[in-house]
Image (cartoon, rainbow, N blue to C red; front, top):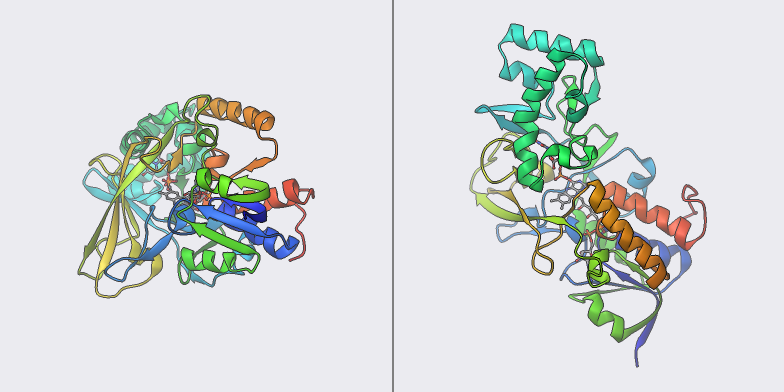
Length: 384
Ligand code: FAD
Ligand code: UDP
């Protein structure tokens, strides 16, 4: 006999785990969470490698948010370690802070020229301001435009072309605006009020989230098999919406990655958590896990990140590619879903085809739970 659940949740990443946890603990619903991978935590999955080092299998994940609610929600399932991410970029054979800031100018230019360019930026934008590079290139001031072109060529053009196989202006401006030029000496990669790493890693946090008598987790289980093997009343699908509909309107474009993990018998391999290679090499960045986790056991592991083309069914669709024509393509799937599968909820980085950070994925899941499941205004926080 087939087992019956109130909910089937496809995907054990943030989106699926948060909604499952809310349904189980607030609504007393019986939830089956499936994932085709052999583990929970989606792309945030971490584990110890053969050298005993905690590493992030799908690329470095640093938690940061300005939302007390999201930090508070996740804090039920983990304690935290303080960590502020710092990134250097190799430009002109030198290591400069990324996002590009006043220190970057001082490293790349002789002192009087750096001072002049710094004053130019402060006069144009004010101190402690953040300016997206594509905006800076449109400045009415020729000197600012020249500097913007320099930063564009040395920091954004090569990196973006490697990462997306598109130039910065072919993408939504929001992509390069994630790493704006900082008119300041603040060299932190993120400026969010809450920047911490889960003390025992992301996977442990997910284990606690899903540890509820109403939740069953089935790993190594694809939706295609599960849908015929169990009965369920409602479904949340956090996989790719184009795949769900058999690529009815053609595959949505994604960008994939290939990781080369290397372990060295040394204290630290690089001086900061992440070094970017905006101009040289086929890889975009090298991240050293020990900086992120604060751990050291005699060896240190780095992840070298190579962007690659995505082939549906073969590679992981790591990144939706934010640009207008892709958003319109996704809208076609959303309209189709409303007609063909009105009872299915789609959400998450793949379901929504949105470039969410982890906190945004949690925020989206909490809002979906309130609005689309409980029928409350998205802002109203139900009592825990
Ligand atoms: P996912 O984590 O992708 O989970 C979806 C799950 O669904 C997957 O496990 C998949 O196997 C499963 N699935 C899909 N289809 C099916 C199916 N048909 N049947 C069964 N299972 C299925 N965010 C940050 O805040 N900070 C960072 O530093 C950061 N770094 C990142 C680095 C990289 C390289 C990448 C790719 C992302 C990074 N992110 C970061 C973003 C973060 O990974 C996402 O915001 C988050 O994982 C999204 O969660 P999700 O649940 O929407 O999707
Ligand atoms: N970017 C860049 N040079 C850098 C860092 C970032 O051109 O040194 C651009 C690039 O297009 C990248 C985007 O800014 O994809 C967003 O960077 P982020 O670090 O947020 O990317 P993610 O961690 O999501 O891969």
